[in-house]
Structure formats: C-alpha cells, structure tokens
Length: 321
Image 1 (cartoon, helix red, strand yellow):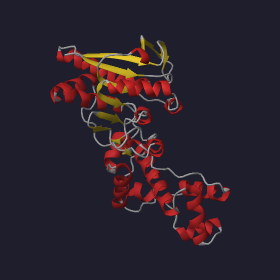
Image 2: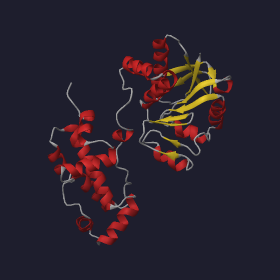
Image 3: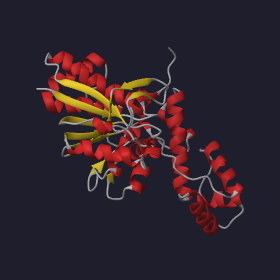
Image 4: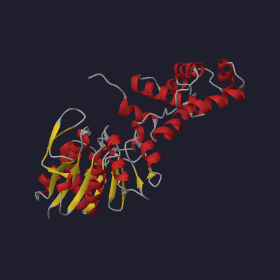
C-alpha cells in the first residue's frame, strides 16, 4: 500500500519542520521493508524554495497542479507564516488538498495556515508556544492548547514547534504500523519515541509588556535584578513613589499583569537561569531567586513548566564538553 505524503512549504519555511518528519517517513519505509511512504513537496511555484536558513528545496509540482488522493498532508511552519495568511492562493490550495487527504497535519506555526483555511474550527489544536497567542487571538473558534507536543482531533493532527514535527511523524507511523516500528525508527534516528513532558518546559513564562512609563520600566529592571529583595506591593509602591492602590492599578494597566504576578514570573525566570548555569542546591536556588523554600520552587516550576526543578536541571543545565 502506497502512503502518499504531501508536504507544503513556502519561502522562508523552517527546514527542520519539513526535514524531521520526512526523515521519519523515509526511515519507516526503509525499516518496514515495504517502502510505503512516498514523500512529495509542493509550494506555490515550482523550482527552488528557500528555507529561512538559506537552504533551497526543489519543488517539481506547484500546489495548483497537485491532484489525486493524498494519505497525509503536512503543512510546515516558519517565521514567514504570518505574512502568508493573507495569501488566498496558498490558503485555498491547502484547503483543496485537505479535501482529498485521509489526514491533515501541521508542524509548528503551520497550524495558523490550517486555521486560516477553516480546517481547525471547533477543534483543539497546538502550535509553537511562541505562536500560541497569535493562533488564539486570530481564530477564536480554535481551542488552543500550547503545552502538548502534538494534538490529534479525528484525522487532523497539529504539533508544537520545529523538532516536535518528529514526534508527530513518529505518532503517525505508530498509528499506521504499530508502536514496534515507530520505536525502531526512533532508535535509528536517536530520538525519543515519547518525549517526556510538554513544550511548556521549553517556554519562558515572562509575558508582561514593557510599561510606557520610564519609572515603571526601571522598576521592572529592578525586580529582575533583585529577585531576593522585598518585592511586596507596599515595597514596590514605595520604590515607585506611589500609593499602593495607584501603583497596582497603573502597573497592571501598563504591563498587562499585576505586580504580584510579575514578581512571580521574574523569580521563576531567575530560578530557571540558576538551575541552568549553577550547581547550587535547590535550597540556595530558591533563596537566591526570592522563592524562599524548595517547596515553593517546586510549586512554581510545576505551575509554569509542568516539570520539577530537578528534572529541568537534568535536561537543560549547561555542561562543559
């Protein structure tokens, strides 16, 4: 049985969004001995299509000329995705191909192109954590979950950013051929069959806006530089020369988060950096980050990254070669 995989790319796409899943399918075809996955790439125009890193991929068939049944449609992402949402030729082409595909998938910000084509309405979906707010804001009919590595809704699959396309493709192989082949492919490519944790472990929780007021911007810088100081609302209001009520209102209005929320986010980020760059015991990390105790450090990490501080350090601590 031939499984035709059509991958949609565009100028400025993320090469790994395409290459990762393509190599999974190629390895599955090799190890199964059946050669059943046949990968094709298409774009708006035939010829070379250049990825964001400068590498060009040759496209033989433009999207308008792709016909016939498709087993798996894969729409990749990249920094250029936002500019292409208004390109009706591309969006309509994706919608047309989806209509003749057994299953439809996206990698990274490719989910926005699926959403623009109306293919995610009423569905739960994921994307790169950096693009989640954009997907949520532009397409309110999509239930955006920014943590999973991939999400399956019927025959529509969406994945998180970049390397998560490999996780997605392994799951597709497992669905088609069983977990044994998917495990063998993962071993051959030296990747996880099931990556531990969601993508929140890779994201940075700091999402406050820089205030318009220079004194408040300076206060944010003070908070970030001094996580272990007294950063209570009364102390911060005194530092800003305002009443507590006025300070809380203005800070929240200009930064988009309350002072207390900003302090927690800043301290969480300080703890993250300490875990990455030092061997300090958790007691010292918690103290220097202003979180007080290892128990509070643990709760903050579970809340923001859904992972323990110890697991985070094991995965992300910088080590000398």
